[in-house]
Image (tube, rainbow, N blue to C red):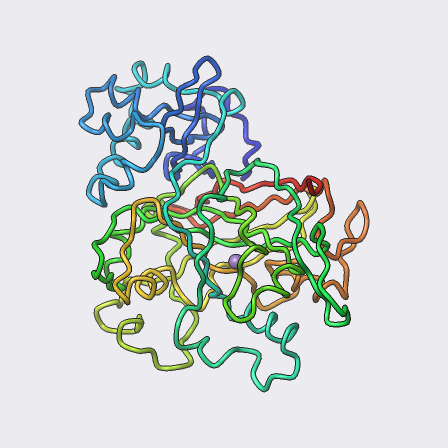
Length: 415
Ligand code: MN
């Protein structure tokens, strides 16, 4: 089972193709002969012009689909998301629609892909216990506990910069900034020499809330439309000097890459799993072990692969994340902060228990002390020209896989 399976028409897909009709991620694309971006769904190596086919079939959903962004669909809410997905599945699987649907497919190789939604606010969390413990051991080796005292009581996060969220394939310019090693007498300015990745999953909010409103754990799927792979590029040297006491700033805000494809949560029903056992009692608003939430597991079984220049360096398992996306959404709104359509929040770096499952070079090389041996040389941190690609899949129905759209970015030299 692989993406390389032969596909000569949009419909000529093996039943277990990872971008089959059970997947149908959403994106925004421009066909070769056009300059008008529009919503599409991916089927195999093709993209279907969702608005055009909806109009051709007289669907009531043509209006939210024939747009240059996913935001109108995101704002429409869960009932519409369910109806649109069911319609799309019927359009790409039922013989009766084939003559009308076929002309609205475009080969992926011939289209341009865009950032699929207008990013409203952007928040990034810190939900992997393995990652938090590794970072604690690296930066606070003398601390009694590698976790900070708050870590098991609330999902730690910070507000990032939504305007620099970029679509997969966008080049990332090496950032410059201040850094000061402990041994340096004064800070210096220049291109980052410790440029890193963070393998994450991003969650995309559809339905907004009013100021003062909160979102309960049980309402997660009324608000969140889907997820996407996310690379939280991080300049560790800039970050280390600037982050005390207010947290990440310019070491993170230069770029955050997301996939061109948003996978709807509805495509990931078979991937839902219980998160790791809770080791500390949670305050009621974050408690996901209640009777009400039985049968609504908050974890997702996503198997991520991180490659540098085509060479796999890590396979972080999202199933190990301690805090769930539902808990993060609830925590983010518990103070009455409102949600906006297009809000994006990152899970935090995904790191599993083993060395081969760490989601950052910081951890993979133990702060540069143990460089990776790649076919093209040693890497402590990223070099100019390096291309980082993250892919992932999740269990789908009937033994299939749901492949997530990749997120890819190449580093170019500092300006
Ligand atoms: Mn991060």
